Amino acid sequence: MAKNLTEEEIFENIDFTKNGLPAGEYEGCSFIVCNFAGVNLSGITFTDCSFTGCNMAMAKLGGTAFRDTVFKDCKMLGLRFEHCKEINFTVSFDNCILNLSSFYQRKMKATSFLHSTLHEVDFTEADLSWAAFDNCDMAGAIFENTLLEKADLRTAYNYTIDPAQNKIKKARFSVTGISGLLSRYDIIIE
Image (cartoon, rainbow, N blue to C red):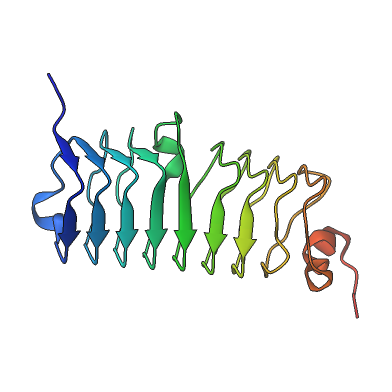
């Protein structure tokens, strides 16, 4: 049975909580100010798509494919990205609220997180090498056995990363962010 293919369409101001998003593949589509809160997006493939101003809080992502997908100004609370398909998983976030989301064991090399809120996001065992966290609030974010080599956290803030439990070789930090690397030692930095 062939999947439905939707190409180059613009979906604007649609509340998908009522009837859901039809299953299939979406290529080059734009979703603008749409409501996906709690919607089951399982098994849907998004390639070269953009989501702008969308509410995706608590959407179901079982087997969802995000390939070269951009999220801008989106509310993305409690999303479980580890349930997405791994093959070609490439996303970027700009001015998004990703609080309480999880990227457990997700391979995300060179992913961009710009001006986003990442409170209590789980990055356990994720590969974030070369990732950029530009002006991101990372209060309570979880980093355990996370690969952060060559990642850029110079303008990120409120993070706590234990260098003994994470790989941070050649990662970039600002002088003001050093306290987030030393918090396990319970020292006072003035």
